[in-house]
Structure formats: structure tokens, C-alpha cells
Image 1 (spheres, helix red, strand yellow):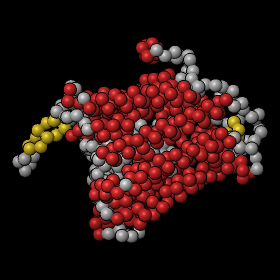
Image 2: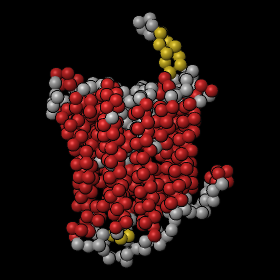
Image 3: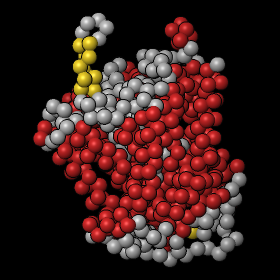
Image 4: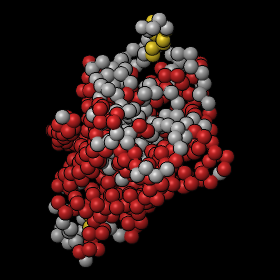
Length: 558
């Protein structure tokens, strides 16, 4: 019966996402190629002093991205530090400097790593004016960068790749905001709360009193999922009944996480006038997502022992209203994107189930990845795959008429190496300093391989901008707040610099005449090669720490 439910959940998501793939993808392509500005957009351009008809080189696009994100980081940091003086602070005090920096870096970096309990740390003004705003704009930054790379592939002998400010504003006003309004209404209908009531005191059944928080949750929940952000309004995140009340809202939230990333390959195909390649990328994403979901469900439903058998699976740490299948479909969606939201405690998953979740992040979050970041990451992998195919077939590697020379290959190689380097170096440095190592070990919820898994997951999640937590690890320390915040920023903006440089390199090229150097990119073999390449790149890089952590835990090694 559980497997019938598992297949039904996957089929439901597949059908709905499939039906929206073409119209949503084509609509987003129109948004970024339309020559007509809306009136409200023209007002915004005048206010910020931007000429929407003036395009930027990749260097200027990169600087605009950095400046805009830096301003956002300062604003969120200031709001958290000045919280006692803000309206609707709900009696919350100023957030500590290290935690405020970590949170600001996290939300600006589309990571939404939370080393705090939101309902006990931040009031409504910080939630709405700081965190919710960054949920919109950080997701839009990722989409803008992806579109810049697509333009680079579509243009020839060009020195520009678009205008960052135009892409950012159009993405928010024409895509994220309308979808969020619709999603908010649906979530409210499903029981997600939306108010400014503050804390309400109630009398419990045993005669004690308890404070129940309120808040504008549905509006933040909508963009949290659609923008693949993941930051919860409450500490329990999407396991909290005020955020995610029912099984169908749980499936709807899983849908919101993946709908835009899965439609972006269609946007790519439409803009470069090669929809077949867009379809191939979408199929590759779908295969990886399906494999991860099936493996995760197998691990959780097949858990051994008396308690899991009686419960129908490993139910520890999972919500009864969602069950094993509701938890695995949500976890597959959140670890396959930069979502970071959780509806269950990954620390309580089976050891192998936790490893599958981690592996799903490690493969680069391209199944289907975050809004924008999934597309530009998989395009980097397409470049490498086409180059390898060219070597195997003895032909000049060409992608969409663009030759893949040393510059493109070096940038692509850096793109796949930067995240593992950031995560592993950050973790190594932390363990190399004795006082810090002792502090981290003391904060582990478990000893041995399981405790190492908690730490490894945290560093990977931050470096790759996922933001989900394995739980069990105390991360609210000055060192971890600072180091993980730095890793988030490096993982976000170094890869963006590489992507934009790659976009500029492609845009400056002329195209190869049709029929010269073409490779068979539209066959099942290319999808298989892409899947193999993604796994082959990701797993060996982390194999040593995976063997010492989740794999050793799963094999019962003390």
C-alpha cells in the first residue's frame, strides 16, 4: 500500500509539472526577451537610475549582482541588530552579531540556513521586511544569472549578456510575485495561517498554559518554496502544522519547490531556439530526481527492526500526517533543489536514507536544482559532457554552434570543483583547530559516524546553498555562524562569477556553420551519459568522508 502511495505521489507531481512545463517555460522566455517594459517597471528604473535599454558586459553584470547582494546583506543584518526598535518585534531582542551575519548571508545567498529558532528570535518586521524580501530577490538573482548564461549561448559576436536590473525586476514582478500570490491563497485555503496576532495564551488539557505563535506565514511560505529558499517561519519548518497543515499541502509544497526549476530547461530551449536540447536537460533532471526519490523511499520503508516494521517504516522524526512517503517525496524535492525546507528530521532517517539525501545534494542540485542555479549548474555539466563526447568520437566539441575551447573548459572545470573545495576545506580547517574541534564535537547530538554525518551535512548544505539541516548538531556558535556564513557567500558568488564569465565567453564567439562538429545530443545515450557523469563527478569527490560518516553508520561501524 505504501508503494502505491509512493507511485501516486510521483505520478501526480510528474503530470502537473509536465502540464506546466511548456506554458510556464515559454512564458518565462517571453519575460526575459520581451522588448516592452511595464509602467511599474519604468517607474522603478527611474527611481534607481537605470537605463533598461543599456546592456552590460559580464563583468558589469557581475558587479551589479555583487553590489545588489551586498546591500541586501547589510539591510538584513541591520534589521536583526536593530530589532528591539522596530514595530511588530513581538518583544524579541537584538540578534547577536555572529548570528545576524550568518542569517543575512544565508538569506542573501538563497540558502536560508537557520541556526536559530525563528519564533523565539525574530519578529514580524524582520520576517517580512528582511527575510521574505530576500526570498524574492535572492531567487530572482539566481534566475537572472541563468538567463545571462542562456543569452551568452544564444548570441554571437556580442559583448553584452543583458541587464541585471531589468532581469531582476522582471523576474520578481512578472514571475515570482504573481505565482506567490496564487500559492498564498491556496495555502490559506489549506489551513496555513496568515495573521499578525502575535502570541496567544491558551489553556492546555492538563491545566497548564502555553503560548501559541501566529504570524504572516502563508505569504512567506509561498515564496519560500517557489524561490527554493527554505527558511521556515517556525523552527519546525514545514513539519509545523501552521506552515504545512495537511498531506495535500505537503505535496503542493513539494510541487512548488520543483515547478520553476523543471520549467527553466524549456525557457532555455526556447531562447536558444533548440527546444530538443531543453527537453534532454529536463529529462536528465527528471531521471536523477526519480532515482533519488525511489532510493530514499526504499531506505525508509525497508528499515529493519521491530518498531519500523510495526509502524510501516522508519517513522521516528516524521510527521504522522505525512507518513514515510510524504516525507521522502518532500525530502527528495528539497535536497534536489536549493530548497532547504524540511518536513521531517533527517537526523532520524535511516543511516542509508540520510546518505541518499546527502548524495542528492552532492550531485550538484541539478535534479532539478534551485531557481536558476539548477539550470546554470547543469549547463556547466553539459559543456563537460559535450567535450568528453567530442574526445570519444574524435570530433571538435561544439554546443549550440559554439566551440568549446580551453577557456570554456577551464571555467567549467572550476565550476564543478569550487563547491567541494569550499565545503571540505571549511570542514578540515574547523577540525584542525583543537578548541574549535572540541566545540563542534561537544555540539554533536550523536557520537561516532552519525555525529560526523551531522557535521558533514552542515558544511555541504551551506557550501552548496541548500540550507537544510541534518539536525542533532548545535550550530549556533560564533565559529560556525561565521565560517558557515562565509562558506555560503563563497558558494553562491564564486560560482556566479564563473557562470557569468562563461556567458561572456560564449557570447563573444561566432557560431560554427550548421552540420560542422555536431554531436548526437538528442538521444537517450546522451541522457545516460549525463546522469553517469553527474554521479561520477560528485560521489568520488566526497567518498572518503561519506565512507567515514553515513556509509559507516549504515554498515553499523562504531
